[in-house]
Image (cartoon, rainbow, N blue to C red):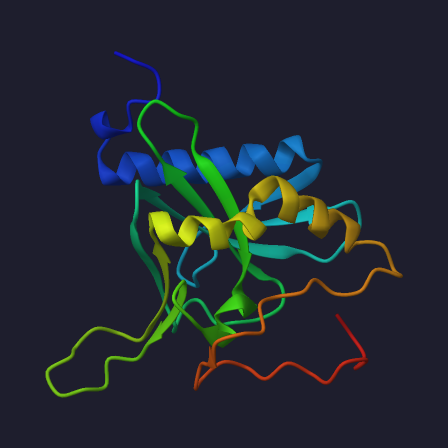
Length: 185
């Protein structure tokens, strides 16, 4: 068997690989990783760097391109919740992206808010991400190695909070960011 033959794994195996891979990447960057006993709140594990606040991580994976979603009931937008997205392409290590949940405050061609309120629609409301060849360029700002360094730097007391996208249409149920200069991080 060739290495990184993701097509030989079933969906559950790819998901488990993604979760373990992300945990090990955080460990390699000096983070402490703490597993949750039960994933019933949209959090797969939490991480912490040095004495910083804990950061909640939800891991999702996709082979090639496609649509990835999180139920709004479980993935409630907040500053310390991040999506770790693993993209699997045959014959290659997974590409990892680290996206702050607050990125979904503004809907655009990449980040989606779907409420399914039309007659006949029965799916639960969800936050989604469109992973396409066209959107990969936009996702580059969320590459794991860049964003994890940002998280480490944000631990220093004089560092401003991380920036998230501010373009697109505001999602109706997205939390409103505090005014610039407001207390807290």
